[in-house]
Amino acid sequence: MAPLFSFRKIRLFLEKEIFILPSRMIAFFFCLGLLILPLFIKDPYLLRIIILSSIFAIFAASWDLLSGFTGQMNFGHALFFGVAAYTSAILNLRFGFPPWMTIPIGALAAVIAGLVIGIPCLRLKGPYLALATLSFPIILMGIVFTIPKITGGELGVSGIKPLASSRLVSYYICVILMIGLGLVMWKIGDSKTGIIFHAIREDEVAVRASGINTTRYKLLAFSLSGFFAGLSGGLYTHFIRIAGPSTLEVSLSFQAIIWAIFGGVVTIYGPITGVFILYPLMEFLRILPEIRTLMFGLIVIIILLFMPEGLTTWIRDRMEEECPRCKVRNVAWKKTCRICFAEMGKKKE
Amino acid sequence: MIENILINGLIHGGVYALLAVGFSLIFGVARIVNIAHTAFYMIAAYLIYTFSTRMGLHPLLAILFSIALVTGIGMVVYQLSIKPIQEHEITVLIVTIAVAMVFQEIVLLIYGGHFRGNPSLLTGFIQISGVRVSYQHLLTLIVVFFVLLLTWVILFRTRLGIAIRATAQDREVANLMGMNVNRVAMVTMGIAVMMAAIGGVLVAPLSVVEPYMWLHPLVMVLAIVVLGGLGSIKGSLAGAFILGFTETLVVFLIPLGAFLKGAFSLMIMIVVLLIRPEGLFGVAFEEER
Image 1: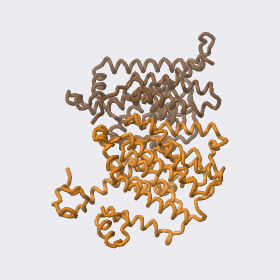
Image 2: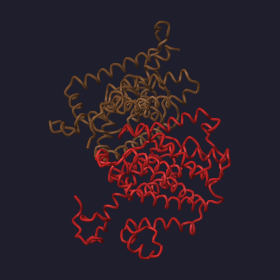
Image 3: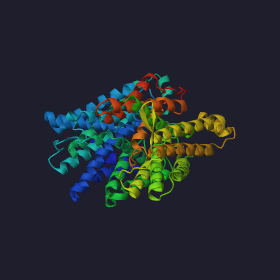
Image 4: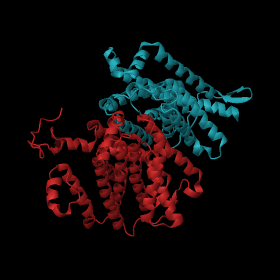
């Protein structure tokens, strides 16, 4: 990959790096579309849906960074979201900190939460880890309910300052942050650290045998993921202007997993796609309020029965294939590889 | 007070044991984390409500019908939605979550979100050393005991049980020894769902029946199974009674305990996991590759 920010040769960059693969082209036009959308549509309800989708997209992608890449199944991802939401809400309400301070502080609180649960839980593996992490948000929720003076109990903390003065500004903050953070997470997944994350998922013993401190990398994954999830939690509180126990619910953790797996894990763009399809779909189904969740469940089941590896992975494998020699992705209908000119083989398997 | 704690703890522990043993069995045999497990328990409770209160069948007949029906539903769900994607473990997980959601929504559609009660099978109570124990509670305890005993007999004294345990130990070798692994998995799913259904039938007269009643037991079952060691029947039993009693103790002894009952049980689970990462009775086996 060429350096991402080569400003001098933007045209060349677009030609060589983005328009060369259909999936990148789709992602590019998707981001461009999101950025210019408010020029044409000013409907506040639609903007609200896209803002919430962007926030949850960061959340689902951060789950992918931890559970998809590193393979540390986290069933309690709402912990990060909730900790950050409550921290930024209380900081804003009691101490009057502005949103641009409370959101990063909330994210740091989520990182600390990630370390607090990460350090004891790293001894656990697979399903044990998943179920142990599931319990932390529930424990925290019990605590939230028992100290209503600080946390507002069932009603939550309300009366928080909004994210920005107008909805359009909030829209741009959320969408640009989503694109930026998504890109950062994607680059992390592609970096040397990301490769070690992949390796830990595939075979932890082998990684340790190669002299890599896997514990440190797993903790890194926990804190990175906690940071991004925390950012989304802070954004959410300041947009919705309430931090309630719903930010810690089991269903939010499950929701993140559903979005990520529906879109396709270990991709970062998969969970983002998942959110941008499923969240608006859920809003659209409001026209049939009784069978909304039922339809949602059935759609998820049917799609996953046909595409068990997720939607984007399935589509990507239809459009592109890997060069057998240099492992670079190519358009499926090209005869030779675009980098090493090796002859593209028949379809894999 | 102490007697109340004892009785309630035993009943909670018993119902959790029914759910957790089934969950453990299906995890052991098919490596499925079946989130929909407690949804079957909810469906059984609703079916018995339908058959006895709405259709006026005899309660005993209603119980038999609902257990049979739920078992059937469980096996169909396994065949249609779990088996085709079995290699993708994480996808199976999402599908079972979605299945549970679908069940919850269907129940909401048909019955609405009201809290329903079920008539007890038996009325009256017995005095045991000065404590009132209602017949329904006593019946629940006896049924739990017999179902658990029956499960033990099936697992350890029949050919089917040997096949189930062999598949749980090593799926491929069991297949090579001529066992139809898929059929074993389906039968195990049937047994597990049946136990969940019996749990639901037992709980229906004791507490309210509502569409979200599967969530709390689900969290508890997950905690129990991890506490006891995944796939270990003995561990699930021990874990169920430990957490059943913890819950009852917290509710009875701590102010605002109802909010904290889940938190306390889960903290116990985490403490146990920190000391023994493989659970109380789990086996720390070599990493599967």
